[in-house]
Length: 387
Image (cartoon, rainbow, N blue to C red):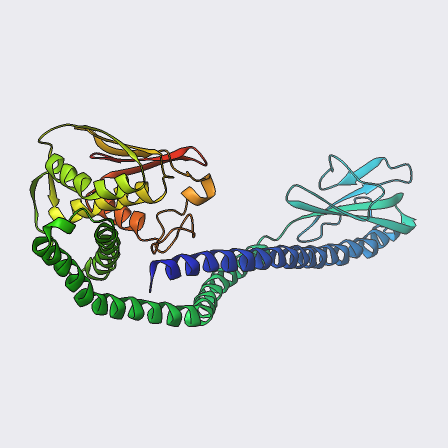
């Protein structure tokens, strides 16, 4: 799977899973509240039934002729008796606060019920009862919902992954075709490019009087540009297969060599080059990687700098920086400029590979890439040797 496909799939999975789980969470909260109230209502009904038993017990005491009466205790609940003026008479507990306008209410972990007596027995007009909330069914509900949510999460993740791959299948096929096309094109370009470059050198040696010919110079510059495009495509295709030969290289000398290579292009566009290079800076790198890093940075600077502009190259023991007075870019473009095949200005040539290759090289060697740019002012790219 290509990197762009992975990013698209990751975004889809995050959006789909988060939105679906959010809907499930809202539904779960509604269901939990409904189920919780059903459990409480059931316990309130049980409390009401048990409280009603006291009527018959009070009736028996009211008609009893015994001199000593025992307070009626009902298993599982506590009761308190009040007269018609809401004065406490007797009970096996005394509520701290009574909601006289409600038949049922809840305080803390207890349920309360107010029961009106008709007729009054032993002066009792109201019975207030209380019972602790049975937490067992509530805990069982919470456990079931937690398990259901975990299973739903796994199910949603599997469905999301399946849907993501299903939707990306046409894109994946197109990317494979594009990748195959690039590989075939790269292979077919090798021979004609090599032939053109070889014959240019041969023509220059056979006809030295034409070396300064403008027409030949144009052919040489165009061929060099075509060669760099081929090299970029070949580098991308073989990047993970080729063997890197990492060794000490004179980065300063290599940079001067590449600047000399780009000099005709800069001269043709009327660009002013300023360079400040430290001598004999040695870096542990593969020479091809180092050349690719320099070439792509210089190529971008030349490409996006208007005729008559300037390019400033600085190399010291801390970093390599290349600054141009080109078209620059805004923050939106800058955030994507290292993506493969992305081009900030489609009016310019190329495949949008330069900074993507630079980013791969920088990441491979543990370097740091910083891009400063302002639209209409220019761009400065810095490669620091240490992060």
